[in-house]
Amino acid sequence: MTASLIIVALLAIALLWLLLGGRGDAPEPTARRRADDAIDHAELEQAERDVQEAPDEESVKDWGPGASKPPIA
Image (tube, rainbow, N blue to C red):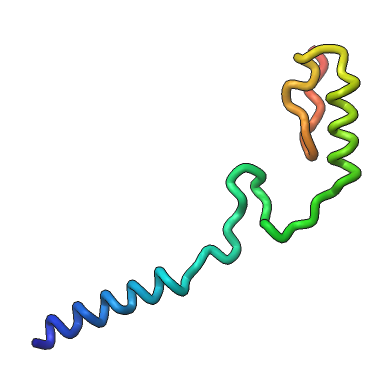
């Protein structure tokens, strides 16, 4: 009787943990940023201009806000 009561209590605790735990501060998987972080629109617009003005496809292979320029070969 007490063993089944302990099991039911553990299952209830596990259920509450799953339901109330949530994903409060989980990062977005693609951006590696928090959902409530501010977006630097000036940096984003500059990155878009860099891509549009690029002489070829290879020069903007790794582009975007926060991306570093590739080393000169």
